[in-house]
Length: 414
Image 1 (cartoon, rainbow, N blue to C red):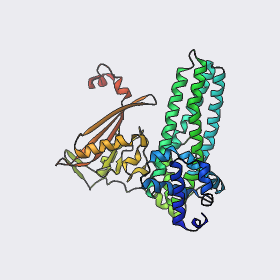
Image 2 (image 1 turned 45 degrees about the vertical axis):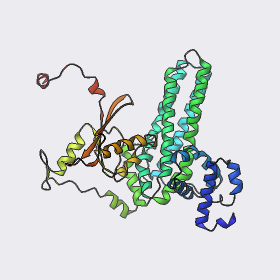
Image 3 (image 1 turned 90 degrees about the vertical axis):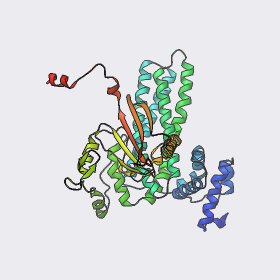
Image 4 (image 1 turned 60 degrees about the vertical axis):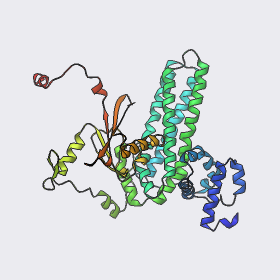
């Protein structure tokens, strides 16, 4: 196999063969023995590129996800030899890594609380385990920043498949959180043995998935990201992080992009004209500034996707229901949804495009709130599909209304 080492094309094909043979059923040890030479000095970017190439050639992302940990096991020795991401406080990668360190400690605390609970399931210990789990779920912001800010930038560099695989694993973690939350909410009842067994069944895979993702980020995702993204792009990533927030840590201020980059990134988008440039609408005339103000003050989230499935706009209200960042502008809407829901999103768009329906409606409960989500097909005067608008609203308080409250009641109140 030594002839592959100095030939980039053959080396890439050899690495693809490594992964293909794993998917065909060979063991890690068998593959490592056959490809010992080519597995030396394999870098994070190479692994990412090979996985991306296989996905582009038709290997399902779900299949890559299924054997993701096996891929890492094959390349682990080489990855351990690579230098780890080197950044300073304030750089997004430094913050991501700091969050992982803090999350590991939170995860340790939850594991300890669950072990204690399994031994003696008292009300006090049950409450402690619930608190530790609630603390762990704050790690959600880490995943949200990856999905809504970092991944869109990676996609611009052709890195799409591996990020979709990671998003699917995030959703597995979220499902594990929810299942463990339900288990702890129900408590042991009269069967302590079954309760302890169920904790192991749920927490074991959850614990492994989170910790394995730490490794994948540190040894594959972040080194690849540092290689692909420019300093200006990192500055843009940093500028969007505060909107979503952080898990357990606050970013430092030591890292600053170069002066030219900082000046470029700091330039705001040109403000809408306050006079002139009037938009003549069907039922009135507004300036772009007035349109922007109206959209940002509506008590709903609005996202517009054009006829080519590209995200063109989202409203930036004071309190968003779902996280959005400027990084998604220009992104295909299919990349803005978890892999598990992609087929349903695509079906809605296909139905809209074919004229089979004009609206899709959903409602979910999240963090104690009742959310109403609707998709509307946008059509021109001839009825031809031009895009989709998504409208999301928190209707928790609306659903609790009873009786009447008239305008006259407001005046009486005054």
